[in-house]
Amino acid sequence: MIRTVGKVRDGDDVLIIFDDGTDPHWVDVVTEISEQDGIVRMSFAAISQDGDGVAKADVAVRIRMKLELAWHVCRSLKALEG
Image (tube, rainbow, N blue to C red; front, side, top):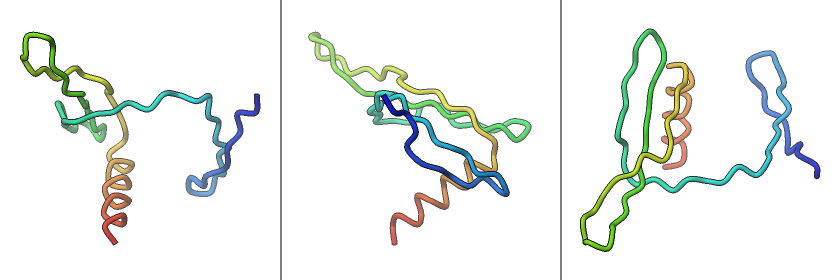
């Protein structure tokens, strides 16, 4: 199995991207977003409903990143709008 899928530039460095086929996680709601000492913490949950009809939000993903990367993500999302 070939895991190499490409390259990305990080400043002056070129990083080789590896992908082991990690499953994507579907999320519906942000459950946490905060920043402390330049580290952004974000958590996302997927909404589901049990047989009793009560909706619930199960945390699916927790992400920790430098504030600089969080702003890069923000700018990238803005660029998607055109």
